[in-house]
Length: 267
Image (cartoon, rainbow, N blue to C red):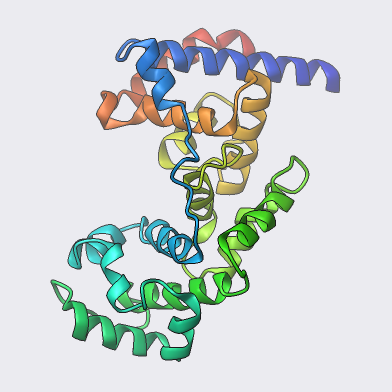
């Protein structure tokens, strides 16, 4: 098969998989409901560095057990504002030289429920390193608009992949997937989060290599979006809906059905 033939076949497979996922989700919700689910809004885009700092810390706690151990123990990450000077990065860096200093203040002011393990590999010390590295990262921007200008420099087909890699490198403990989640949450529809559903569905349908990584899945979502003529955000959200418990949690059923329908592409 020539390179051109392969590209055409891949484009047809991507389109067919997207259509199958759409039809599958429409067995549970109406077209209007689906359209609403796939709509990304930038209306709640943070207007200040302080709001961006809070958003970044909210995204950073969405891994493993952190939502329960961090946000759950203090009734939400937003309550860190009383410790973090209403999320002022510059003041945070001036007040707290180390993660231990941050954690000491959190324990005194917020009294997290449950045991606060202070070993360096435990969740609270790790999250405090995230707090400080996030402040360092955001303090280089003079305003939220300055930050968005910086993001805009990368938001193109050639450079897009570099942005979540860079943000993940800057913010300790964030990682590529949560960096994507942060950017997507700001209303950037060209970014997708390589979550567990997509990382299961895509290799099963040969939409990405069998040995999946966040990097390879991000690229595959971008390609499917291009071939299906939609945004990466819509591909991300649609395949998340396929596996979401809120919509029946029928991921395995979809994979089995889609494999049969897409058999001609796998011959």
